Every structure is written in C-alpha cells, then in structure tokens.
Length: 128
Image (cartoon, rainbow, N blue to C red; front, top):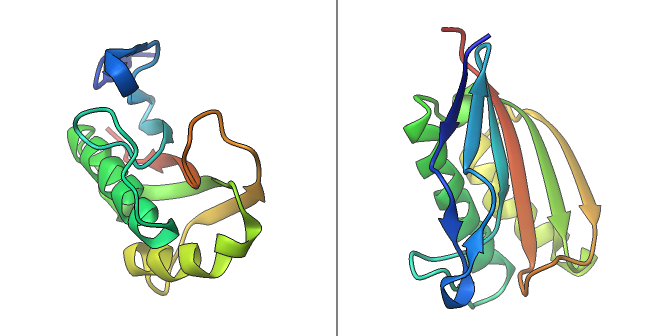
C-alpha cells in the first residue's frame, strides 16, 4: 500500500510548527486532518460560527483539491462544536457544501484546543 502525505507541516499562530500533515492518501482514501478557521497567517478568523465554518470548509476544499478530490468524494465527516448553540448556524453553512446528498457525519460538542468555534475532519474516497 502506497501512502502519500499532503500539505506537509503547517504553521499555526505565532509561527508555531504544527506536527501533522494536512491529509494522508492511502488505498484510495484521503484522510483530512482536523481543520479550523485558520487563515494563511496561522490566525483564527473572527466573526462567529458562520464565518468560521466557511473558512474551515474553504481550508478543507483546498486540501481535498490537492489530493485530487472534491466534496462529492467525501464519505465521512467528524465535527466538533465548541458551543452547541452554534449547531443551527453551522448546519446552514455545511448544507451549502453537500446539498441533498451529504456524507455520513458525527457532530459533538467539545472544548477545542485552540480558540475556535468549530473543528472538522473528513474522509474522502477516490479509487486510484
């Protein structure tokens, strides 16, 4: 089985090196690491759950594209929300990306390790 790392080590807030790759490809699967609403400077965007969800999904879309995938290839999503009151706002944005045929999903409330409202990871499948 060939394993390919996508995106290399990422830089976070204050130039901190984050010890994980953006995604890993293995046997047709693409495992996207947990993503937050981090901009290109490594800072979390502000503006509430809608803004953070859009930025997080944009970050994931970029990673999927690097792996040769789109949201149509996503088979499983895990979501962590810092505040359950953000669930409806999150769902409105999320639905824009998956429409009437969303993948399997888990969504739980959890304190996040960074000052973000949402973290998302995904698994895509695209046979080689």
